[in-house]
Structure formats: structure tokens, C-alpha cells
Amino acid sequence: MPLLTDKEKAQSAADVRDLILASGQQATLSRCAPGEQLFGHEDEAFVEVGDLPVELNRTPPDRLPGDIDAVASVLPEADVRERDRLEIEGETYRVQTVVAERLFGVLTHKVLRLVRIHDGSANG
Image (tube, one colour):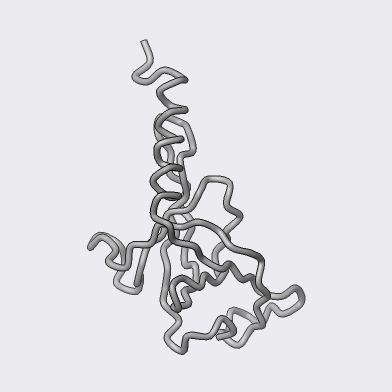
């Protein structure tokens, strides 16, 4: 007998979606412009991709590396990649890692580990 039925799994994913949307937070997603790969330097040009709902936590759990400034949860279908930029409430972050979170095999959301870019611009 499975621990969760398919209906319960779907409900769990829907509940996480509702929680992310209920946060009311939006982020502007930017990505390195094509042809601008400069070996990971912070002076790359970024272009805006669009907006997406997020649930931002500026105090990440202690078990994360010390260089992580915040964590954000996004919907499972969000096309967010490592090295993308997120502007949230006037602060700009670089996406350090993207972790797909699953509950009994069902993708419920993605967790982004973020590093704050201290100059506040999406271009560096």
C-alpha cells in the first residue's frame, strides 16, 4: 500500500503552489545575454526574461553554506537556472543552485539558493 495516493500527492503539490502564490512576492528574472559568456565574471550583460512568483526567505537555514544570503521557493515549472539573476523587493541576487524538491516522487517546487549582489544592479 503506498504512503500517499496519487490524489494526495497532487493535493500536496497544489498546497505548496498555493503557499508560494500566497506570499505575494514577485521576482524579475534576468539571464546572461547570449554570446556574453565571460568565464563567470560578474561583468556579463543580463537581459530580463520575465517575472515569476517567489517565496523569499532572507535568513536561510544554518545547514547551508555561509555564502548563501537567502533562499527562495518557486513553482516547479519555473525556468530558473544557476547564474541567473533575481531582483526581489529592490535587491538583486545571483542564483547559486537550483534544487528540485519532491514529495514521494512528485515535484512540488524548486528551491533557489541565492547570493546577494551588493551593488544592487542586475548587470554585475
